[in-house]
View 1: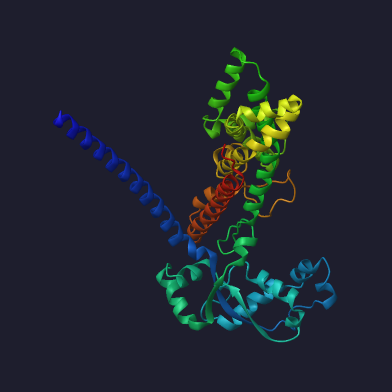
View 2: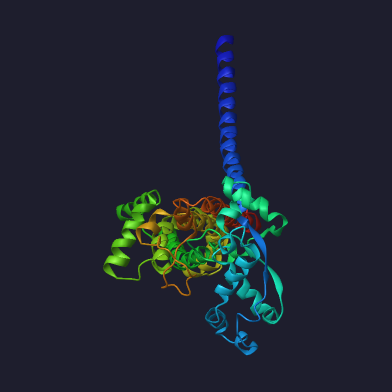
Length: 402
């Protein structure tokens, strides 16, 4: 008897140790992932700049009135601002490489500075502009011997600052000009379509199945099908979206509306299941009390059951939306992997999504895209953590314990 008791206690200790080891292993993987992303991606939020002396008085002929109109960008480009910036770089740093030291978007930084302060056209000035990728990587400690030697020669004329264009720009072939706003806006438009379609249909389906549907084999078949759809690989929904929305209805390829419709098909079963669980958790006494006071069946559902179940439904919806935001495979199937150099203006414009943008940058051979990929992953993780934080807040704020 004592031997069997000792064996049971030993088995229990082993089980607890295995569970504890599993928790530590999961935490170690998570810490490794976050540490790797932060180590590689933190530098992606900064850029290296060089102090560029400029004297545009004789090279750029633009009147102040042209700088205040809608065609200011076109006027400055037509006046040869890009060539003037390259000439200034050759004059100031001809021995160190001249214009080759500058990023492709350096003249755009000068253009924006002139639009903010037109006096730059009438007096000499020095403006910090972004440098080329090789100099940028060398200044951050990951360059070639040649570029590191160039950085040593430039000395204190280089500086480092926050890369605002990374948050406001779209995709580009030059890593120093690449930004995430285009992909992030595409993701937001896609999520709006997904939420607008999946939430009402999912909630109404859950209400019908729990409150009105008769219990028979057809209802059981529908329930089993919904549970199976929630476990179907996401690429299958991509194939479905490709066949239905593009092949049958000929909707615009790589548009945010098609991505939203495809992700809505994937998210809807999750919302239905979460909604049914939340509705089931509402005690029957709530329904009985409402009926006893003379409420109709619809009033019972929409005035009492649905408000009580709404926190659980919202929690499941946000978790489903967070999963949809991180999906890549279905969006690749419907063509949202194209090079999009401008943020989409409407739902039918060509767009890409943040996970797809990360996938595309990870395939680039240029070293500058490595840090951009990690930085974009950090942004995606922050967005996902924020969505899960909202779900936790809603659950704790509105949860009712019966």
